[in-house]
Length: 300
Image (cartoon, rainbow, N blue to C red; front, side, top):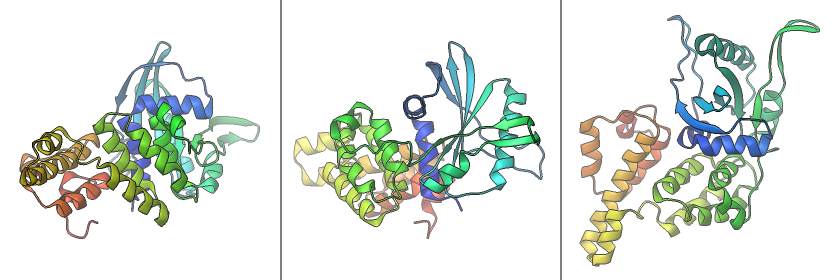
């Protein structure tokens, strides 16, 4: 079963590919040409019906020097079957698109990062027909950003730092400066990052800290509908405005994740005024496989 932290790590790359590319340049110090444009491609690499192969995220990056494919895999633990899968992914994508594929592995585990970084060599000893060298982002090379000023300079990297270190004891130290830094970006991006960060926090203390920080800043309620209602000072209108903003945020999360939302479901969510129900739906929306999972009992 895919975990919410697995989903959150690679979803972040889809939502802000420019921020992800900056992170690769800064953390790994690799010569990725300056991007001009991005496109999220279909991640399904299935060729024959009995064999299904799917990468987590596939990005096309347009640069002055040509197009590149970023093959992003979120890895929770060691899985030796992945070694053959990764070699297949790169070979298949190059044959299909004739663009240079680059394998990038994201993980919250130091041991998994070290395993994933090992080259995959196919062929004779000393004469390899194919060598795969994954680029790995993990706790050992992603910086632990605990300074508010530094977090504000690159909000994406600060959020990615919190997500990468979400299993370690340092997670809580990142959250307060990150919460402050989110206040410097637009409301929709802040809400999206806040949800994805929460999905990757494994430490119970860190999750509680993040919940309290998000309650204090009210990201769900910082919406133009709610702001207008608060200015009018009507208690009833304020509650309705908050529910409306929260309902719209649930739908925004599904849209950001590229899930198709049927009109009937959209109408149902927008009609809901139960704040607790909307909160549950927002949490489900972060890792739902399809929009209909929002209404599935026991999905929390």
